Image (cartoon, rainbow, N blue to C red; front, side, top):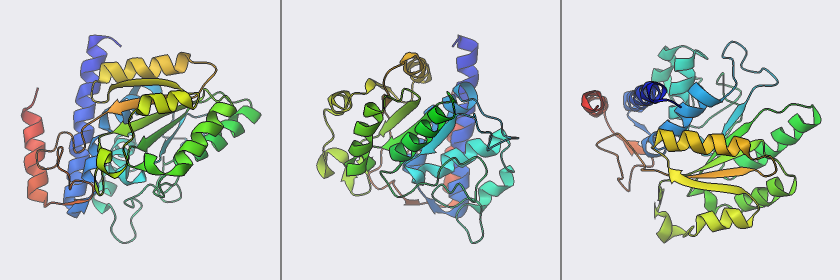
Length: 275
């Protein structure tokens, strides 16, 4: 990725971050922390790496994304709206009655969502099923998965980790959003994940650990993961929960946060002033 491409992608990530803050702020409550920590990786996937067509959201040989930490749906909705999967006006219907944008991802209700999520721990298992189905059908598309660090307390994560390595599925490229916070506090207090790199290596995965807000580093990690031909990949993203929102960044209570629209507008103005 050259410097010009990097500049454009950084601008796009800022745009997505602002749309996400606006979207949740309009409702007045939502999963701001975990949505903002994955903006960079989602931006790189949807604007650089994924083979997709918004006009054909169910195209059989498309790349797919499973947002296993489904509460981060607002960030993904911002991207899907920007890509043209549905009108941007839908963003202000987040989680209200009759909406097509529930707080957690729903493949039945939202165009462009590849898997319904929210019951934590299930994303990699779903990816295994999709990858094995593609293998049977002779399709080489990638299945991307984003899991949370708090979600990694779930036993199903590690059962699926073992299975993906057993079936030798390099088409699965997963990310851990390692923002060090979950609903009840810091991950090291609730259930310490360290040494998370060694854990995934021991399950037979190709593992990289990087700054999840450094778009150049994330891009390089995805390229390396695509070069891996024998094992599934896990890219551990060191991130900051609530990144880019002055009222939420790094705040321990930012998992599902109440804030008014005036606060959202102020946060967006601050982002506009940043280089």
